[in-house]
Length: 88
Image (cartoon, rainbow, N blue to C red; front, side, top):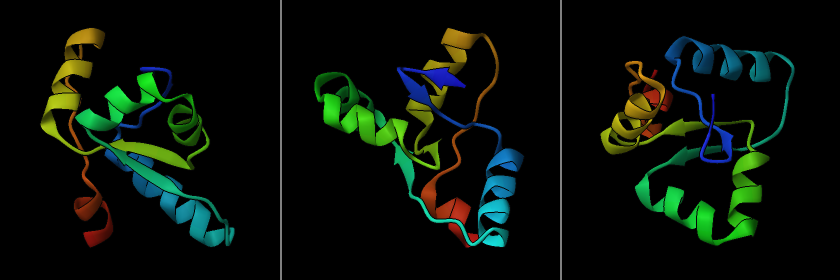
């Protein structure tokens, strides 16, 4: 979902699928795991926002970001942290 000026993926199955698709295609790119300070930085630093906008995908690293996005979009969204993603 586009939120805070960049795409932020909360769907855990979609994240798994994106990683699998990238590996199958031998794709290259980068992933950003976004926390509260990253959100602030994205609004104060246009270069950092551009970095987030160019990521293969961005995931939420923390309950506070997920809780804020849940309130804004009136749906239950859950964080999928970097260690959780790559532990699978």
